[in-house]
Amino acid sequence: MRDSGGGVPVVKACGLDDCGGRGLLLVQALADDFDVTPHNPGKSVWAVFKTDPMEKQQA
Image (cartoon, rainbow, N blue to C red; front, side):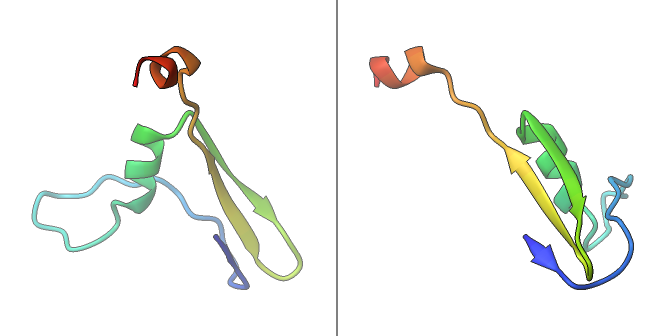
């Protein structure tokens, strides 16, 4: 995802009743890697989801 806004997204703690703020927490839990690449203007947030080649063969 890329946007032209400033700042860098950060993983933050959320309460059970909070309506938002879980996006990067979910990415952190599910992705093998993620980071932010700065641009002028803005930034890209990227994630890598690896798969197990053996799992594909068994399906």
